[in-house]
Image 1 (tube, rainbow, N blue to C red):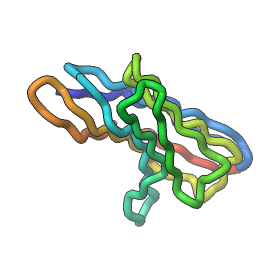
Image 2 (spheres, rainbow, N blue to C red):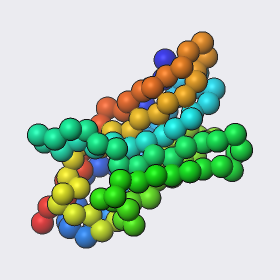
Image 3 (cartoon, one colour):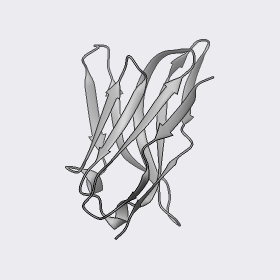
Image 4 (cartoon, rainbow, N blue to C red):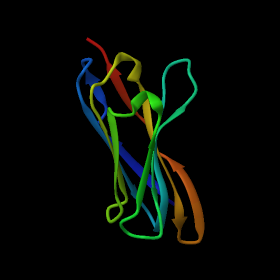
Length: 124
């Protein structure tokens, strides 16, 4: 069973920064993709950023939603099974619950699992 611990949400003023982190634990053999999603009140959950792992230990490909390009950066630490999201120049429309998601292979099973979510509120 793969479990996550998310941290880093909170209240920040427009233009400010926050860093979210998500650490996975369990019998993990490999994580193919690490992602952050968000869901604002009354809206569907949307993909914010994804970082993929290829065959090479140094291969990392990241993709971002158009609304966050140039402001958010996703990082992964394969050794620690951790993904982080650095959010700069935050806007009120970034207010949402942010969820980490990881897809990979654990002992005896594939997994596609979600964190519990962390609230990010951007307001003056």
